[in-house]
Length: 455
Image (cartoon, rainbow, N blue to C red; front, side):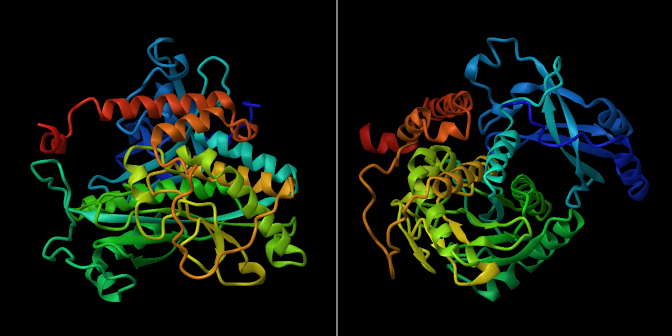
């Protein structure tokens, strides 16, 4: 099961052609995408890029299963127990681009990592996990088309004495003081930032299709276009996060994709739009019998939602997002209704789709997509029933079995025989071990407010 490739290695000719078109490039960032959706790798001099494309670059194979701070936890006996062996990162074709926000002319290349001895893709690569779920969908005649929406806050890079953050603004501008949902004035205020995001996205061939001011003070959302390649769509979501953070830094700000950076403000989500097409690319949700298929897909998402919560809300802060507006804590669905977990946006025919609104912006796009497509496959192939949609503002209390605690969510993902049909049980255990280790590292010190409560 774990021998499928996530992509062929890019040939040296790709670098030669890129170098000819970009002779000023001085460095190249070669990185893999870890279980957090972060990039991990090495920056190499441009003079060594030819070797990267011919032989790859070696670094710790455990980079794929590090926590949010880049630390390993010997999950599955990988790391401390096995001597932390290297793997070989090899560039993927079609993903070599400039990083236009960098002060030094730099390129970037997403890599897949292979075993140093056998030359096979490492079985715990999140890209491979998603690729295998997509393969299961396509084997069943289901061809998913997906699009990602990412919310984030622009913040001041300076921290408070307690480490807290505040809303940021470009040099010469005043930070926003009030929420301005869908405000064009807020977009104008951040025009320099948003224009640079759009220009950088065009340079990197990322299909960005719009930015809006969101509900939070200093919160924005950027959308990506629909793709029939879910692995590439998840790659692009990771690259968009990297781009947004890079552009923000170049303007003296930071961008955070924390799920809940401010308790008094809305959280940030990763919303994924999903439809299914036939061999000719026609949307099956919008064709004859499509409503039944769509409801079956929703029913699968309902069935797997709680088992998958540790993927959608992967850390301590993630759980805070579920105590806010428009963040689902039940399995309900509805038409054109942002208060539920699974929204069917307005639109018929080719526009017919499901919007999965559960995941936080801090979740891995690859693992989030894997969970969603696993649920879609399960619902349709098992012909599940979704129940009736809810109407209007839906404010039901949290389901009794909603895993609103990280440890509970991790226990659930470890025991899910249903999710393990799609995402290998050994991976789910390793993932859980990493996240448990990260949580223990976080709480090993006393929080400042504990002194206010207990001293």
